[in-house]
Length: 62
Image (tube, rainbow, N blue to C red; front, side, top):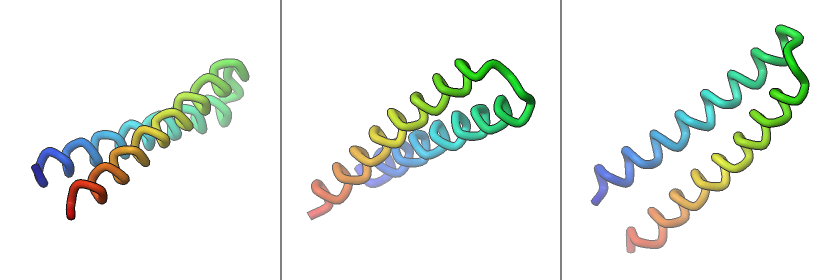
């Protein structure tokens, strides 16, 4: 169970990081503002999922 939770958490954090970097790169390039907004909304959703995973890990650890 510990290894599965670690994989889930690392995957969620990697997804958040990738979406954040993609959004920043789009803003720096001067890309479509709508795309930046969409990427930042995805980032917030993925952060929520990552937070739920952390809470689940802590809840089921005891």
